[in-house]
Length: 342
Image (cartoon, rainbow, N blue to C red):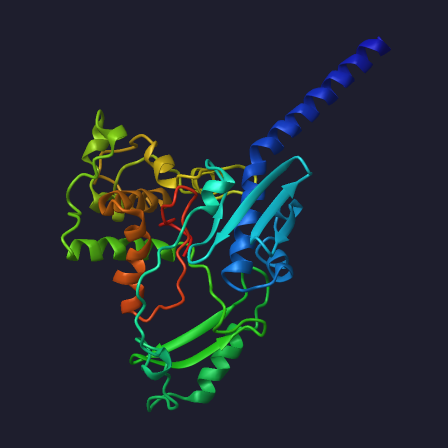
């Protein structure tokens, strides 16, 4: 009887350990990928320190189990989990940081930001918002004391993920107040996350103005030709009415459609496009990061030249709006991450 109990206990322990290892193996790409990508962008694009990023952005379960190494010379971040799993993120000048997934490290390192003429104007001599010159007075009717009291209140909460990094107050097309956390300044960049979706749509809008795309025409992806997805238009994707069954959820204990796309796939547009229809196009609205990345994939195809594609946001959007320091990061395939990484 004792032998049977011991044997059963041993089998149970083996099965339990196997299940734990399989679960970690399933979750590890998300853990290491999140750590590597956000640490790399935080250090090499945003200009922050490893210590501050690990204390704030990476200090949550289970990401805080990652062990991160920064190669400052080659600008590569490697994040490991229990020495068995790892992820790398590579910095490319002008393109920020890209997670090495689905493509080799050499292919990711080969992503190249094209050189093109930059306006020779001096932003310090051009009034904001087109330039960086700020007025030394505030419009009448504004209480500077009340404004400063409000800024003090905003910065009181310093809890990670809840604290304020920076705030800018605009009134009548003029910056009337601006403040940064003590360790940050206007020289730092700040991650857009989902604000990138608005820039993706703005990029599409610029291409509409140039007669390059028609938002009401189907995007004509080859893998959609034989089912109802062939009816999905650019407008459906931009307004998140495509009907694709892309699950927009986030979790620390499992990989969702969104985290799988961002942390395990080198071609995010292709990944999102693989989803089947949940409903007919234009029949339901469902928030979808996947849709924005399909849009970027489509815009890249329309432009047809990678150098022109990578330069397009700067030429058509950022240089015209005074956004001189913007970095839009691509996935490993070279397509801008239209949902998140600006």
